Length: 108
Image 1 (cartoon, rainbow, N blue to C red):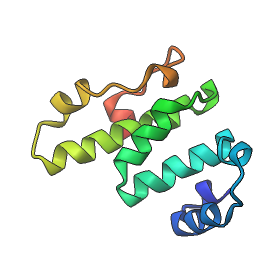
Image 2 (cartoon, one colour):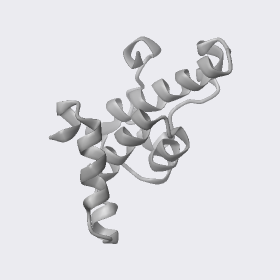
Image 3 (spheres, one colour):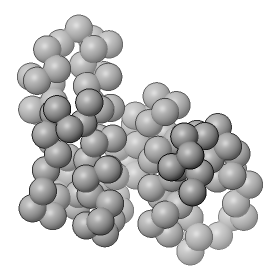
Image 4 (spheres, one colour):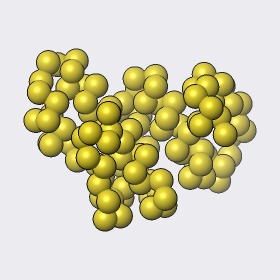
């Protein structure tokens, strides 16, 4: 719910308030929320780690691929590289590909 409301700060506070429970922190909804918070905080290393190390249901692939690509585009802009060159070297992880890959225009 907080992911869809656009309140990333509230979502981040909610995630910080969760008890230390492995089962809870490996829940797909929690991982997706952590990825959104990491993206909005500019913590792309954490975002990539979450997306590369967990299997997500196909229902979430398009949104998570979009975060992946948008993060790489933001990094490309920081180092002044053409976005299409940088992004083509950083395709989404196989775990996020269920036959559908978000295009560059969809990610922006």
